Image (cartoon, rainbow, N blue to C red; front, side, top):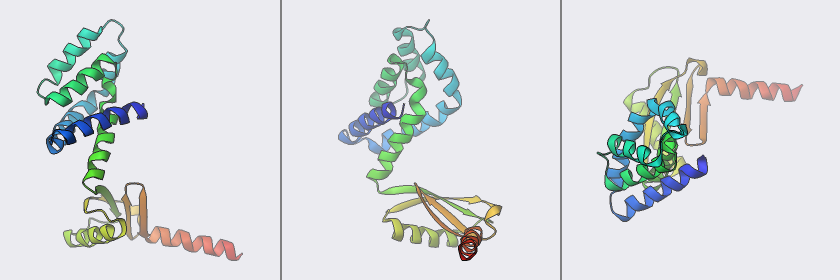
Length: 179
């Protein structure tokens, strides 16, 4: 499934780049992804339904996604033909990763015990940029009372943990080694 999603995402990304429609493609695909996510089970059922032939699935795609741009519509029609409509979300995730990489940007989740001020988030944004070399960080602040204090920052697969909970865990490990 991951390989399939990557192939479709890469093809759509390359097409969007080649036609100078990357921003528009991202916006439209994001809208479709948001609309389709709650309907994934129904799309899986449609993909698996042996009574629906290729033409019926293509017609479904044209009716439901008819408002999308030509390239996105073509991909969705191919997905319908190949019984891959239920992969839309996975394809979007891969497409978004390519989009973020192209723009040298990434999402970050900042966990804290309480909601951080805009000033605090700006300082964290500056620190993240300096440590990761991303030009843009899209931060979400998540409340996590288990941290006791401090913050934990997740950027992609990287974790920067400056929480009291982490400090206590490190201290505990040191005491165990001393025994």
